[in-house]
Length: 363
Ligand code: GLY
Image 1 (tube, rainbow, N blue to C red):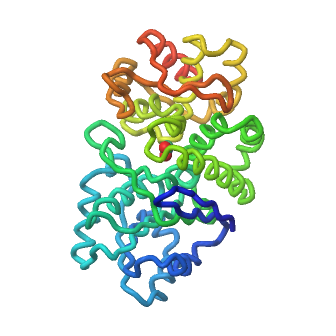
Image 2: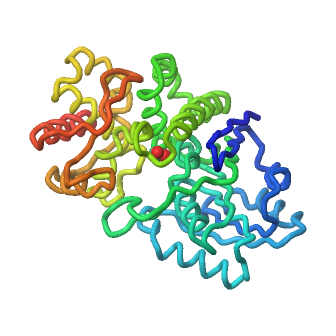
């Protein structure tokens, strides 16, 4: 098992990464001296797949413990689901001395993190990601929240967990679509980190579909370490952390415009393609650099079905993105692998060019 410390000054925590480590959960809760009143929020599907392991923890636990199963979808990443969790906590007499344990993908983790930030003015929490996407990205860093209206993650809080337990054993049950969605965030790190990791992903991403635990562990360790350093340098996203939004301004618009038929990670891959085309269009990179950067993206061109995206709608959605100021859309763009530009503005024609060409890769 690897332990990665997210060494924040006020609220640092450990991320444990391993294969078959879920059964160490209670030991970890105890060794961290966390609250003994446990409340689990578990993705309904994950519970049905892993009920034996989860029930074992329940039946052996000596203190107070309750569980709620929730359905995870972008449409249910909402106040309605939060209300259900708050109501259940209150019905079962939980108060501030609660440890909320989220088991599921990014949607469950984000909702639970926000419940933990707000219930009783803040309770302890543990994140147990069960998808590749949440393991490599959303379970670490403390971004929590829900969707509202047509805007993704617009209501939320920064709230770091008390620890994160990543067990690649959970990833065994993921289907190709879910693995591809996780790969979207992995690809993002392939552009943010360095050429060695970029080439590693180029050469090994196929083994992710085979759920090779060694490859999964290597990818998760690399991405979490990198993300941890970024979060330590800029927890509240006033600067450096914005790089983690590479492809995301486009991606959120694609997700909303596709009525969430496109999964987050798939949308991120198309979003990164669009960001590369935009980097070229506004003169940040040459045509040959663009072609070189697009090589990794083209490996996924037959994996994603974009459907119909209306460019005007996509641009209006991008204008509502919470990362913007004064209605101006700000992009994270690339000069090269590991060379990132933040807060780049672009005119409408350039954005339409990026949308047309980014989406065009997958047609
Ligand atoms: N998922 C991007 C971030 O945590 O900042």
